[in-house]
Image (cartoon, rainbow, N blue to C red; front, side, top):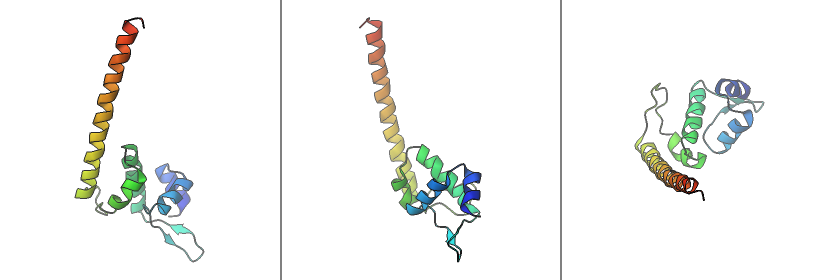
Length: 115
């Protein structure tokens, strides 16, 4: 499929798909005329990239670990490197959540005290 079709199927802009390619996250074939041709599996790969990016992983972090996905596996098995990265991200998110809870408590106390 061509880049426009992949963009429609995934909801990711053509510009972002090109950026994913520059970042080494996608590797489409090229026609003799230079057009990008994506495989069927690239639709799911883009969806996974978006999901993992929204979960807090930067594209730079994803680059070395996205290749560990088991191609053709509908359940998307994670390799150890990706599991470790996700665990570290989850730990960071937990710390941020705790800091926000503390900040909220301070604000509630200030509001209650009439500042």
